[in-house]
Length: 338
Image 1 (cartoon, one colour):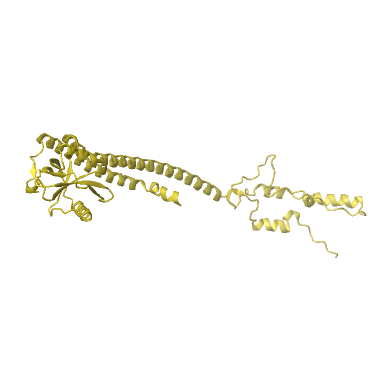
Image 2: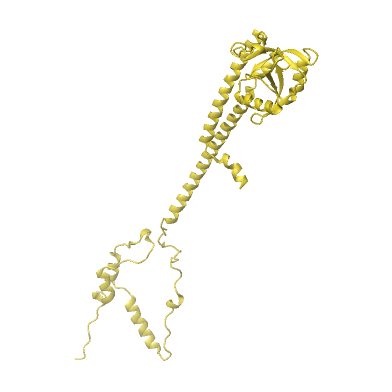
């Protein structure tokens, strides 16, 4: 049952595979266009350079972020503040808290992958010393409301007060240009996956199409042979009439030998009676000239059955009279006693 369920997607019609391939190819093309536009925008962003630092105490989202979402903020990193984590849609993220430039309240949250928390802290500590380090953070502004809600819940659990307009930033780790191009090239993986899926579906559609045509041709050939065999089976057999040659085999089998055996003669019959009987038999069997003439003008026999497979034929009235009463030459006068 499990095997049949797994093989079910491979039993669809080739048109369905072709339609799915077109859909996957369309999505791949959209992602590829997005990748190209992101790459061009990344090149422009790198060429323009980072924006000027904006103090978090005077943060204005409308004026302090560039058109591509890049920000550069100035704040204070307290090493005593604990880091935290949250889980948006199964993708865990870690964060580090950042106070405003005056150190009055938690103003920004720096979000990275959990394995990059240590690298981010090293990058912040490298900008100063002590428990209170003024830092400048360059990254991308994240305006996802879901992330902001999850971070606010986590800060409440941690009992850490924060600003009402908390800024969520995904900082650049290491080289700025490399980080920008890496973010722009994230969609290339989706393009490769969808493109490969589209190619596989096209190949599968071609295989199904060719195999379907081959099976249809084979089935039509088999149907033709079966129809021909059925016609030959229903066609009546045409047996040829027995020839006048040596082959005199009857289609109804060999004649019964007992029927051809003459009846036994009585023991007390004399030789004279035998001779008289033979003479009379010869007189009866010997045809006259008139009978010979009548036999010569008799029309050839034509069978009424299809193919001439039977020796039975209808007799005319003259043949019935001759068979029953004989001809005029064979009639004998009636003998009277007077």
